[in-house]
Image 1: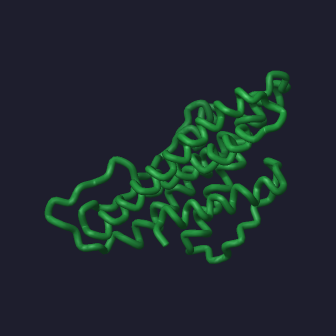
Image 2: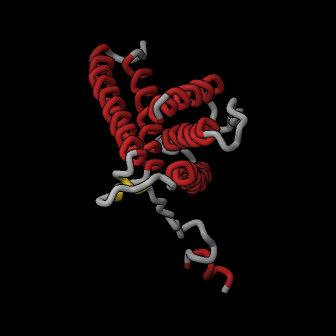
Length: 203
């Protein structure tokens, strides 16, 4: 099974599992137990994305209390950090798996790492799930459902295209045409030693 096929399959499982409970406080019960497996990593990754998707919905409630909005914003910040760390873990997985491949003379570097491409595929899976909900929502107008159906078809086409691009990237890595590398995000705003608004509190 190709990398994109594995990702799309696992993303669907994670998103469906979340919506069985449909709560941002739902517990992640990852069915893939091998901590070193691709499936385990990408399920955890998609679970984080799914919870954050719903946190982003909640914080946009017009009547949300300011204190509650601040708590949700802090959760989103923390989730973004977790998401980045999961992408970097996934890149480490791919790097260990493919970095020993023999490279061609004119090998090139990709502008984004494989894991960040997979991250986009995870978000796309979430868009498809929720756009399908809107396209089938009985309480919505027929015009709304039609518009969402058009958008859903576009998203599904994008999923096919991105899946193809991801598989082509891995094929080029395997063939030595693309050199795999990792890029650390080095996020600073959550680090008490790097964010001046945090470390100045201790001065």
